[in-house]
Length: 489
Image (tube, rainbow, N blue to C red; front, side, top):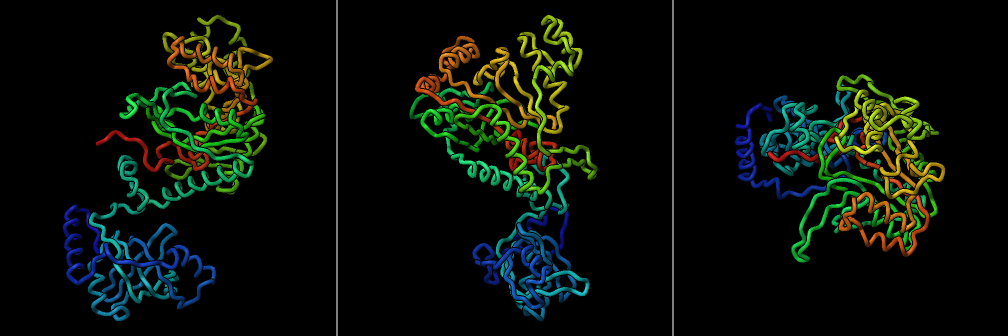
């Protein structure tokens, strides 16, 4: 079992497979049921639950091999961790020892034996018998302690997981984060539901959709860009608290914060509003952080392990109005000067403006460029321009804004939320304005549902991938997605 940097090893591995089969052993047909995980057995021995000589049955992948002649040391690894194996020729017999020589790094085996500690203090298993369970025909990554080529890490994630325990732990914690989100909402009485991923009209957000065609119905459908409108129909139908965790799809650019398909949580509560939803987001994120990570202080580190950013989630979270924040950063007279002056200042401050930008878009471009990236600790930015969110209710004290918040943490939006618009007449007017008079862009089924009466409600969305980036100290969305979107080879 010698590791070589050569694809010629593939042929050698095929030869070893043939040799196994000649001996009547087909590793792809053997069965073996482990009694526990490799890491679990190791922990039990450390804790004193298992004593010297404890029999165990373990299975996993061979990740290291040290040839000592008639004695062999191996590392066996599964999801729970690693343990050392000690294989003696006299213990397993000459025939089995010859069979053992046909094994390679990355093969899967099952072993039975007894636990002990070596003179060097290493917790190990003295192997009494073993069973080949799968032959790896390709060699493992040359660097078992982490792939360095970023493209390979994302394109062949299984190699990344094989060779980097920290990467594997990231995705184990991502799973725990999603589990705790579900637990939290269900304990508060929210019903988990599922809504269609293919929609006749893509609504709930302003984004370019992916288009597909349904042959039997003879019409185009769109992969959903948001979960919102179907969930609100359920409020009309009589469910008071609903949520969905699901994939959205947006046919837009890729960046360290954007992937064409992403996971979103949306939750809606009858008789709630934007303030009750701020409490929900704050409580939910803090619960997840404390339960999964055991802390409300999150450290982000660079590749050398140096702390580059500390995020403090301790409650209460700061709340500030959108206009006040803009005035604070861009000048107290920002909303009093002319549009042309605002455009001039925005460009001067580094914002990128389109030729046809409307007034509210100029301010939003400034917010996204100058303000949002500086919001590291949690901030609820409230009462944004009404044009930004046509599905929210107008603010009674300032009808140019809506009762809305953007929860910004780690320099990006983690969660929007608002008091839902439930006036069907006003909702139609605002959606028509957004559609620019193109009636075919209106979701008439949603508007008809509102006309049947929707209770006052609050709603939130949380970008799960961004939340995982925040909590797990990752700087790129690709590092919290098992299979990020890449250009095909």
